[in-house]
Image (cartoon, rainbow, N blue to C red; front, top):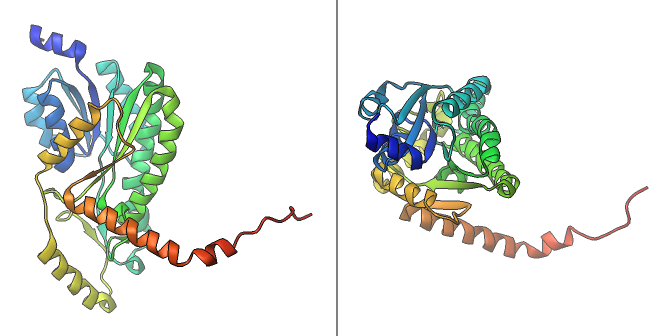
Length: 287
């Protein structure tokens, strides 16, 4: 280790990033290494990280990991702490898109979507909490999605996995706050990753052909994607904050959509206010 590396290792943060070999995970890994931090890059296939491992041999630990394997997740966290001594920033980024209409999903496909996008993040969160709690702080960054703003045709199970992630993460934030551990839910819009090109599709039912054609037309006309580097820059700003938010939207499209969906929900709630309030009346407990 060089003198400069030794100095850096004394002050640098330690990241644990899942899905680190591709897309946003790769961008987060590169950004952290570029500022002198140390990174545990976990992925099912770590070969794409070989170039970074060669460039940063003392600051990048590439770990082969399937986040759906709870025991393997706990073992990976133990190995990360043994290598670098602590964890400062944990990014639950591993995930995939299983595309298809709700009716089309088999049980195996539905469980696989939840196993990766929700349970994987749950296992990592459980595994790192004792370390973060013991050292008196840390920051868990949960990479959610525009799909958690609402359910959209053909991404229903993907949205379900992200809704579950966000519900769990809100509770986690409240539970961990007293130990100095921060939690942020990041909701990105579209980025140039392989999320959509490598997505798994259900066996299509012809009854949805017209809807599928309309969706493809909408995506072709309105898809706006950005460089993953911009998402990484936003996350670097996030983790440098002394008072990070519970939620962070990434991109103008997802920002505007979040406000539109919120306004629509508020309008609906207001329109049905009388029915809602009439459904509640305090009465003595039944005997």
